[in-house]
Image (cartoon, rainbow, N blue to C red; front, side, top):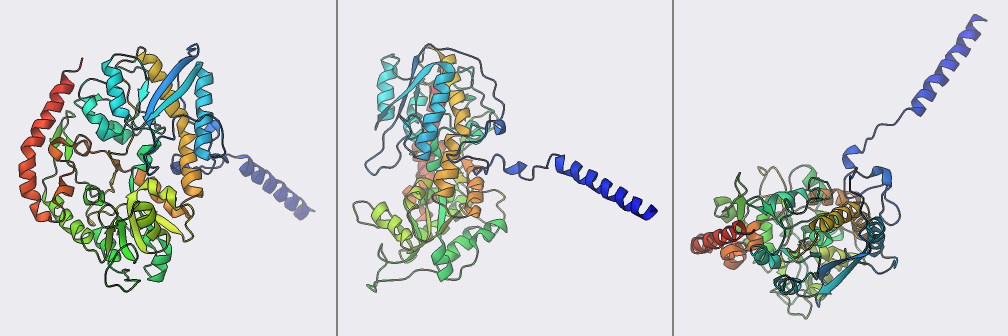
Length: 496
């Protein structure tokens, strides 16, 4: 009897213990990934449950039907680099369009406003005319960084740090590296955040064709990143292994198979992605020239050696004589398994949705094993940013609307972009999603590349293919760059 009682008592205690563990809150093993580009809690359209959103304290306002107007970029003739992140007339079933539509309805209902946009090719020219005439045509303009830089020195835009009181720039919905790198002398006019999708598309990445990797037995390329062995040596070594003159005509072109597909941007960006920069800033937020280093010269020599070798790489800008050298050239080569690596801005990845073979995404390689961090350049000629014209009559209104739009974009537009458009429709494995997290957390915005003082930002491209010309070219450009940079600082200092 005593034994039976002990057994019953043991069973009761076991049930009690199990019920306690069952009811106890589970540890969040994915806490570090809650802010990743891929959110497994996202719904069918990329939306994230309200309870997972960070707190956001905003004032209650009723703006009586105010028409809030954006000036944004129209798509170019190649259907690249147009704004898709600001306005949607109705839901169409496209994830980004529909997330933009729903985000705008949230903001419009919350503040009793009406959001609209004007799409135009020359955003900066149109903005200049509007602001100089002191007419209030637009509440926000969204040009590319290169185009907007000259306007920023002339007092055309408000300082986001001091003149737009409701912006919460420390929020995770704002790109903190952009906040740090895009200011000059403590003044910041450019904003990039979760509502600026063109900044994502303008980030350079390395795609790789898995079928070519398998064909040549190149192994698991992701392991090179995870083992901290992804650098110039491993990247360039792989590029040299896969070339084939497929049609036997004795030359290499878009009809053959090559190790690297790219365009002119690689001449600069592949070097900048080692951490070298045209311009850095001191402790007082003042810029200084920084490109003339031994490391820059060595990097240029190694990069140019690869890019000018027509038997292993091809440049869409210079080597392909087709009306559309991307769609019918390098894009087609990659899709047809005739390129191992495709180094290009991320926008091209959207063109790979119908590709039969699998492909993956890697960060840009490090310079060598001594480099501690990855760097990823955002192309300033195609990156849009948020700017507030000085003609805006109500900076508080403008800052409230943009602050809340960017906040709401984080769990709508941003997740539609990453979770649906890229993760589910384009890239085909979890490792690529992890690589994108790494890439987007290590982006750089080089003021020298943006303002291009004395052509310092594109100096590397100008000396290609002879890296030996860099020193003399730099010495010639340095005084002009210094003078142009000082002029910019003087103009910014004189802004009221």
